[in-house]
Amino acid sequence: MPKDVKITYFDLAAKAEPSRLMFAIGKIPFEDKRVSFAEWPGMKSSTPFGQLPVLEVDGTKIAQSGAIERYAAKLANLYPSDPLEAAKVDQVVCFIDEFLPIFSSTMGIQDPEAKAKAQREATEKFKPKLAKLNEMVEKAGNDYLAGSKFTYADVAAFCYVSFLLSGMFAGATLEVLKDFPAVANYRKRIASLPEVKAYYEKASGRDTFKP
Amino acid sequence: MGNSPSALPPLTPKPNNVKLLYFNLAAKGEPTRLMLSIGKVNFEDKRVPFEEWPQLKSSTPFGQLPVLEVDGTTIAQAGAIERYAAKLAHLYPSDPLSAAKVDQVVCFVDEFLPLFAPTMGITDPEAKANAQREATEKLKPKLAKLNEMVEKAGNGYLAGSKLTYADIAAFCYVCFLLSGMFAGATMSVLDSYPALSNYRKKIASLPEVKAYYEKQSDRDTFKP
Image (cartoon, each protein chain N blue to C red):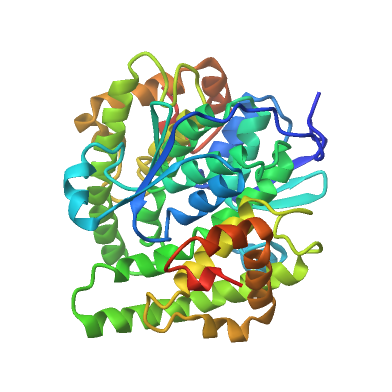
């Protein structure tokens, strides 16, 4: 187990939330550093790729949210050691990784009306992916997304769905899940897991992550 | 209890039947092909002709290729398939922090192909060539970053002291994107990135990589 773990990101769920949640589930003490947008330009060049999140583990820096997430998953026992079982987790995560990019291009639009319009269009593009996730959840039945155990795949799906439908993006609220009842139930199911519920009881700005 | 960086990965028995389905392109199939070959894993390298694809599409987990079939289990998504192949080939560390160093390079290299992918669907040849030349310009800052990463790499490998999945991904995507398939994107682009150019030659010259490409056609940029 590492001694000093620090994850640096903006004060948002987005690309750091799966890692934060997995460190919490794994009971790995970590510093959850939130950087303001104003502070960011000054620290950008000190990061490996000029981006956040960045993870620091006993002096080693790791960048790229996917790499950080998978590291956190392993420490939290949420990533199988068997390569084929791990591949089942990875394939779900690869699919979930398609969700955020649909919305991220809308973040830079200045004009509020143009931004809202772009976000509503993004929400429409998101729906077929939610339909696919709905199908995957239905097929899983009483199991989880990558087999009989709760894994990184479920954390990724839960965090990105809860974040993207948090109301931060015009048109993208939990109401959208009315058409995807299996995903709606799944979100509640994961949110109700004791370790997930306990983490979010202490968090603010995370209403959609609660049961 | 923990893994030291030098600990061997747990012994995974090699699967009996492995079949990779992808188009007759390097692109998203190549890192897996190369790693399975390096790992001496017997596999069927099925190249699906574009005309056959519409019928096959609905039988795949996400309506996309590549897909890997392993003793009756189907795995989709290039990243998942690659990491699985890397583990079979002992090109992915068992230590989580060492593995994270590999994963971060792969995440970065995964940004390359999407620059060009939208240009594939453009039908007008002139518009397509223009879009591809623009994509090549967007690739250059990423090549500059990769050049810097190669320069910083002590042992000449991108993640640690030996060849890993990180080097395979970087090698395959650079060689494919600069293969001349995309207007403006040829090996001469690497003239501005000498460390990266040397790195490409070095990986191509590794015995197990060289041996694989000696038997392949349409992979000129993958050769030393």
